[in-house]
Length: 79
Image (cartoon, rainbow, N blue to C red):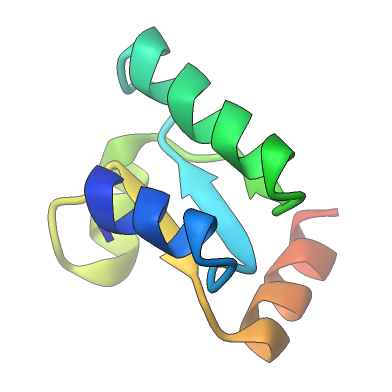
């Protein structure tokens, strides 16, 4: 969770899905999206930072899912 940890998880190919808050800065969104595309990791901007914070109970604007099974199910649910 958090930008630096998410970038690290992407670069190490540990991330299986990346949630990027819709309302974070465009530069941060671009950086996370570009890294996700480069490493071929699915990403979504389906939620705001507030919604992500509410979902996990910690103030975060971006989240990397590292569990493959959970990521697969989330991708299915996101459509």
